[in-house]
Amino acid sequence: MPSLPKPRLRRQRGDQLVAPPEPGERKPQVETIQASGLRWVNIERPTPLECAWLEEQFEFHALDFEDVLSRNQRPKIDEYPSYLFIVLHFPIFDPAVKRLNAGELDIFVGPDYLVTIPNTPLQPIDYLFERCRQKDDLREQLFSRGSGYLLYRIVDDSFDYCFPMLRKIGNKLDGLEDEIFEGRSEEVVRDISTVKQEIINFRKVIRPQRPVLRELESLKQRFLAPDLDLEIYFDDIADAHERIWDMLENYKEVVEALEDTNESVISHRVNDVLRVLTSISVIVLPLTLIASLWGMNVGVPGEGDPDDFYLVVGGMVVLLVGMLLYFRRRGWL
Image 1 (cartoon, rainbow, N blue to C red):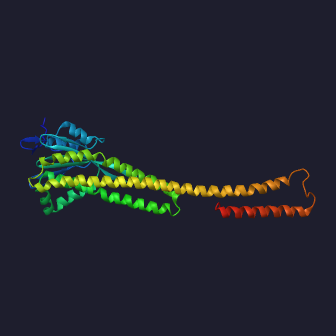
Image 2 (image 1 turned 90 degrees about the horizontal axis):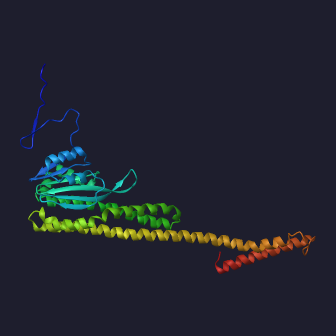
Image 3 (image 1 turned 180 degrees about the vertical axis):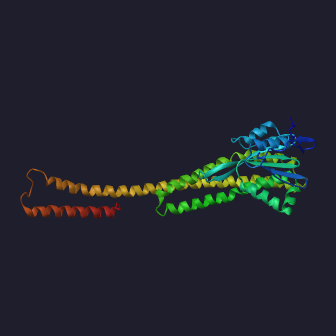
């Protein structure tokens, strides 16, 4: 019986021999950039296959891999002897449900590597990674300062991406204010509710980052280059976060004020309608009373005299005009 051919082995990571992937087997979706002794690994939407690749390449704690695959992680920093594990959230617009959701970014930071693992496409990360891949000068500029500075650029660009989203919310609030006073208060109710929900979702994403960024400031020295000027960069991230939070606080107050104003406008218009209807009812009431009296099936003054009909009608007209003038003079109409 002929012997079966032995599978060819390829060498990986020193002397370890690994069988090549079978035909049609999916390879780990991993992107890597390396320069100046620093490696940036980016893995978008990781699966167990990508986590297995990370286990082969790095010695991370098993709980960290569970957190990477989990979809319900809060922002945090876990400190280990040789690396940091950071979980951050950033607001992204989900076109499927047309609302803001939280995009999670998991980061492993070591002395000579940085691993970014977004669970959904994050435009700032993709943009910076592509620029570093295409531009040698930018890659050298970022990577030569160490993993701490590269971490700063990634986090800073992600927070800076929040400001265009906040400006869009501000423009919506300005438009809503104009629409309220243009007589579209009923149609604006749904728009106000939508913007209010966006602000609430934005706040839910941004608020839990505050203790994480404060802790990151205290740990920044571990992987920063000796250049002392780099210390101010992580403080700049905290300042950007505070500006975002202040804008959200301001927008929260504005949308609540617009909601109260819109309700006041609607209430004022309803009161105008009720005032007109009430005035009409009060005006018609005495006329109805007179018509009822002269329409009774009993003897009434002037019964049988056709001229008295015109007298009654004339008296009703005079009463109607008099009440209208009186109401107009009092400002009720």
